[in-house]
Length: 252
Image (cartoon, rainbow, N blue to C red):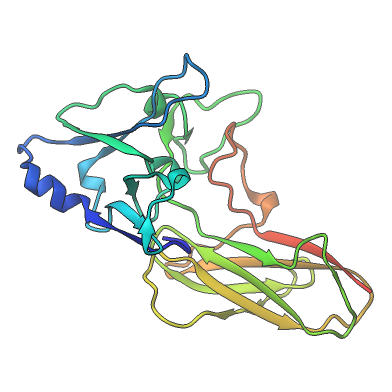
């Protein structure tokens, strides 16, 4: 997923070789990383076996080389379409169980409210929560930056990437008037897989001096659309934020 090219073995093949019992239901992943604070438990990610498919791999290479240390050497769990808190680095142990194990990072950390909006208020936490899993549809502008200065009537190319949980990006739209009107960006060609980041670009010439706002929103193949930042409801962790990206450049 993303700009990295991962190489590894399928988790399903490893489990087949291990020989799962019929009542196997949960699978836990633990890595060699330790928490910065000594009282924090080690990170263990537990997932339901039924939620894992053949796209899940145990990666030992990235971009044709051994995994870099900071990317999880020597082995990393890759779950395309899921947020990276589930991508356990320095994988050291895989445990399959019949019953769910109550663990800190499953029961307390990296969770969102278990309601339709996945939201709550600063004054009152929603009583029921769920782990973060599938990624929201999102686009991110890589260039220009909000600190950029561009020349009037010069050719400006907006560049960025879009992604979702694996349904695939259908289109990316660009607005130069704070979201009143939208124009399609050009998506990169070629099938890199439904989990890959989709690069986009949009060209225009600023015709007036002053500040220009550039906004982008992604839409995936099942119609899920990136929302305005103002429409995203709040949660205590700020998790799964996918508001429409915006940069403001100075035209001189």
